[in-house]
Length: 198
Image 1: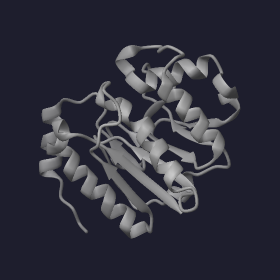
Image 2: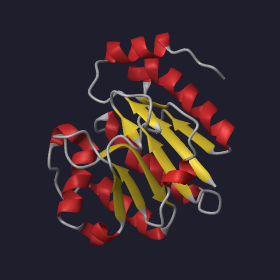
Image 3: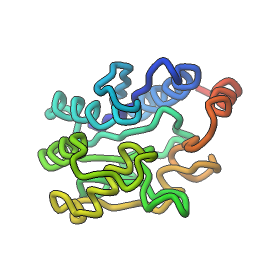
Image 4: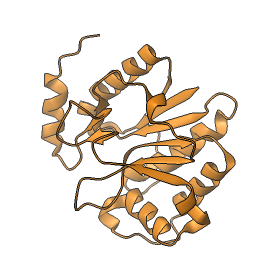
């Protein structure tokens, strides 16, 4: 079974609720299990909640969830492509980032539910390896861990070319439209003008 998860707090509820609704409906159509939480797992920046939240889902659904997909709360699915089409026989499937912003972006990624992934994510959550760019929050921590090949991570992931799993500007080709780097007002306006056909 495939699980899809999101996390957001009241600070972005104005658009988070709409994007959550879209992603939840997508999961219903596809037969996936959808998870969404607003509970804080850390006192750090809200972006850091994704890692402990995913660990919680993986550990509590070992017999149910085979793969788990993370989607940032400023993103939503824009087509009916199936997640199975993006799953490969490797522990982490990441998305490439837009040119000049690092080689991967954690706005969406797919993980296997196994011991290696859980152990790696617990190390990621600890944050003892530094950060290539503190402004990138948990993504910067991950990039530092990749740089240092923590737990032999270089053998455990692939990176899809930017524009396959997510796109920041185009809604036609990628699985997900991700409003990365956009203002709060832009995201609210997007949520308020979306025309849903389900």
